[in-house]
Length: 146
Image (cartoon, rainbow, N blue to C red):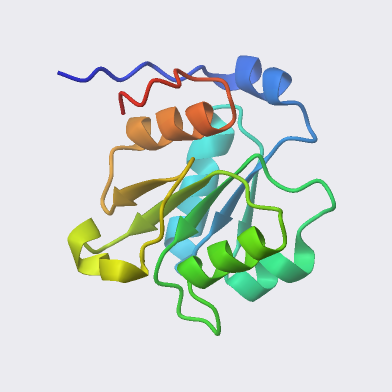
């Protein structure tokens, strides 16, 4: 039986992450972007939202995010997987939490080795997402129990 650690809350996370550490939310669905940003901010995590891979690439500050929450199926010139490949090729690949409405099996061979990434199927438990974010930014248990 796996256990889920409770995420740290409010000021303790933002003060530990610092203002230069933030989480990017890249999703073409405005409701999803706003909801995830509110969830992160309510838990003291600095969040910035992007409606497309192109917007992310063109407006990411020099200090990139500590983690990206990325929709696999962006309706854009570039999908979430293509954005991951682009960032990897540039040598600037932060940990990624992919979100999708499809089962992982349905994603097929287009899903590369994840490394320090994870996949969550919509709808997902917000506590699980928070735990994954905290793990990816080095503030949660790294034992993969989520």
